[in-house]
Length: 135
Image 1 (cartoon, rainbow, N blue to C red):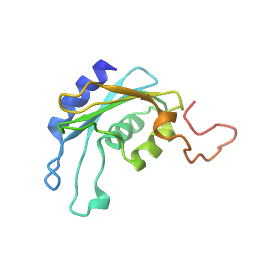
Image 2: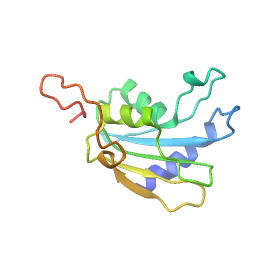
Image 3: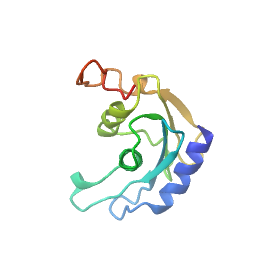
Image 4: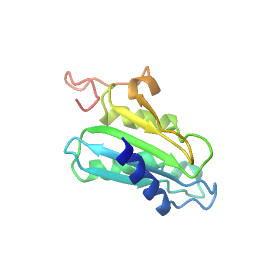
């Protein structure tokens, strides 16, 4: 998880955040072991903004990953960079309930949670017996 946080910190240097001024980075570890980074990409139409977590997951999926085993998110903020609700739901699409998520912030000691702790009642669509968690 420490490596993921370090890569997430590096990723937020690429943030496009002219509206909030908040830079967030994420790193997702795919089932293959490969790590994908992402950053927040803001838009003047706020609904079109892409969070760092979804950016990293989208990169992983577009490269062929279907399972994310761990994810870390951090930012240059004085508080913890917790994933928003949309990101938590997207995470539940590709991560199992026991997958680990590390969160941090500037000068903060990392906190680690299971996805089921961050999203205890995830919406799941049962696709042919798969519990929709990529596992």
